[in-house]
Image (cartoon, rainbow, N blue to C red; front, side, top):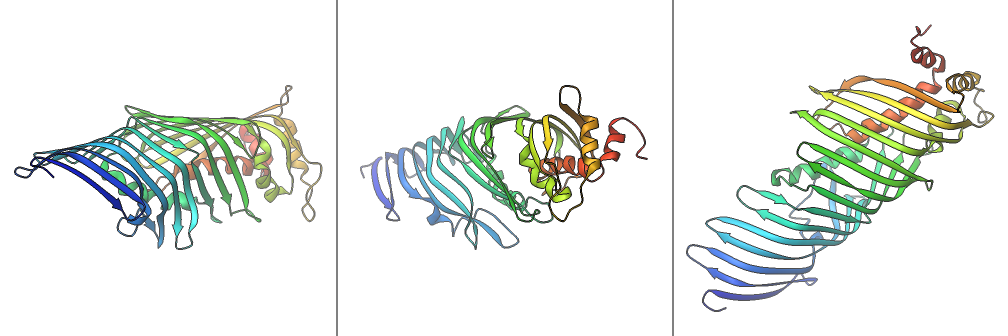
Length: 365
């Protein structure tokens, strides 16, 4: 240390290091410094910085190696940090059973800015390399993991993070549906795309392989129109292999989907804590297996329903509105989307003639 100047180097908890140099004035306190960090494991801070819990289930950091280079300025009680930060080998798990929830090979924040008054965090781009998310649909149909992830994001809400662009490279998603017996796992991999936030609109554009099939495309737009979650959510899914939904049909009727390509459009209207969902689906080349599974009756009404709604180009177009419902603080939109898919299958299998009547504007009788 020299008057007004300093140089510092330190090992952080045996795994990482910190180096800093710059100028320092004690009265009034001012600091102008360059800070470099590398290999600091954020898991060591988990006991003093819990990231969120619901009903005793705690989301904890298993591994996260932080590195970066920053310019730090402290003057008149205001602290500003600018630079670039990266987290390698990120792993997060559910405690106490340490069930994996989220991982990523690398998370990179560029053009990062952190200020103390008012508290604010911003980054031009957040890049996620090989992110992997695991979710579960419980026996009652709720996406429970989506609900208890909410406190994690709520913890960072006071920071008012502003990230206009999130890029996803080679991501994957595992959704285990425990409402089916045996439990059914839907895996989506090779996910590439972006999430863009501009003014009051959020646009999601992703492409990935579902269950090893052809590349499916998801496009979504969220535009809030007022406080309390009011807004419009449009989701489009193209080139979806219909056999992905076969276990749901089999659970209801014993029939399996053997082929078909689907396009879906979900339109959510949320207003005053109420939501309405319109589910429009087109299916090309839809085929069922010939007989029901052992122990279940043959379902000729299902075959008839499918035959009647199929046009001359072997295409089925269906529009099924879902009744309005309440939106609570913990309502995950992902769960609502999942219920939209399931409601479609149930409408076509449990009461096919009622569905046909509704499609043609006829009374249900």
